[in-house]
Length: 438
Image (tube, rainbow, N blue to C red):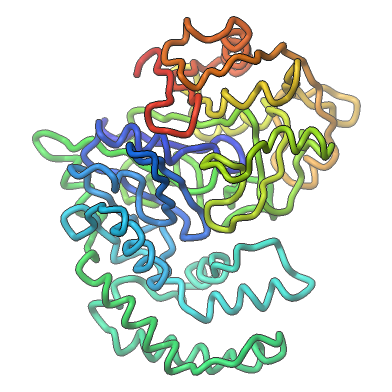
């Protein structure tokens, strides 16, 4: 078993990228298995600069690591070219020796993005990032999508597809009062960007399986975008993304057998957040408390989206939602959790409330229900734990944490029955307390 999987246990933005970045040095390959450029990770480089990643795996900062964008991803060629260029401005090498792009991934085309913008101007808007994710996913399901393989195998057809789709859409763009475009110019620009990716395109399913079955098997770290409660099958539907965000999604999104999965690490954030619509059972709406929790919004770890820049909604830690996520992802007592932003807990004040159960129709339930409308019906049951005021960003040993911080972590372990082996106490790669099996 040679594959380790990192998954978000909440609503996204848990800090998965920083742990992938930290653990990438122990792995030969970091592979992204779902989502598109609508998601983002922020990695803090050793020199303190921040690196925003959207589709490129978080292992790109490690020179000896191969990075794979898997078949389960959705690829906007123009955005990926721009992302690679931005990474290279940080003096980080990106070439076919350290980045591979699956020929079976689906392409997000310009008309998908316009379709998304058109929907967001009408009554059916869903708070989308306007990245064309739902649109390309629906075409994929209808078996009418365009895959990355077209870039090298049939670029003429790709150009024609982009152009004709934009022309057919013209009336809808006009009705939505979107500025007119030159469809052929947009199509040609997209194809030019797509062809810049040609050297990265390969059969990544074959590559990964060859590496996993080698005499000395490669160690693979599977990285997902978004998180459990945004999963298309198991999340708070319809306020979800369009792909599988679970540990099982690593198998379909990379083309690897479940038997290869060794370790599953679920990431949870001590101060949960959410961008966009949908129920948020433990959401904090008090303006003064929110301002205190957010703190300085100019910092690297500020609670605003890496991709959208939108300010995130914040709340209290919700254990019923984490328990459902654990069930589906297989994050049980034999696996492990990572907890991020422990250094923010003191911002709650003298005590931090933790939701330990829900009340639903007069009954206490320990595991969150499986739909958005049901989450709207529950009432959180809270327990309060004392906080601490000491600055813990310099702490590297669990025993050196304030007693209240140790008890806070231990309480979560007891309530979830899963050991917490990684604790984030700051945004930098080195601001982590490592415990247990790691």
